[in-house]
Length: 298
Image (cartoon, rainbow, N blue to C red; front, side):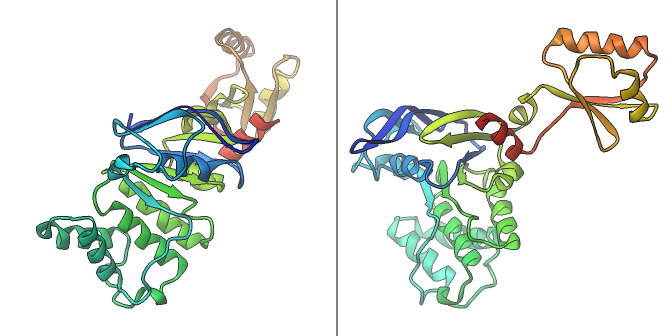
């Protein structure tokens, strides 16, 4: 695991913002960290960066313990804040050259690395100064800067929150491409963005992790619903099964059935056979992440 967060609690005075947070983030993955504004996401990221002390618990990044004020672990981290700031009179290439000098990147590596990153974020042909950039262009440059020294972890704080649909799509595509060389920790309150690119998702609610799992598992585990299509019409199939006690409903041209255990699934298959209902297809019913969150919060 590139990141291990163990029993982290953070208090500001009497207010407990984080409560016994535990997360393990695997390498070369995109880890979605979702939650409403004010849930404590940014506080945890600042603790991961050593910018805030934890009240209790530990954080380890790439095997290095995170210590407030002694940020050796940040040698492994690239960071994109929600509103990145730059010297406005530089071009993108000039700014990345400055960053390469500041971080002591070997001269022989600078030109190729800067060009490949500008290509990645779609700014390779942009020669104008940063003061002329749109919000989306600045976010893309921020990603390039954060990836400059090949960090093992890229932390992105709400990178798409203020962008239009085109800008959001560009950022998500770039983060997905970045996964080949780093681990992306991606904070957002826009659940559809997390759903598009994340391998694993954790939700922070009022300072507590209320779920954390692979995205596909989260989409399938709520309500244990399965999708059936038949060689006959779905309305006829539902009519033949109407006396059964299973929760069933029609969605488009399929029958959705809640089957909470292996025994229930086997029994339901026997009921289909008894009624001569021939299955065309069967698979778990996946839900939008938003639906999963709403059901968990009920």
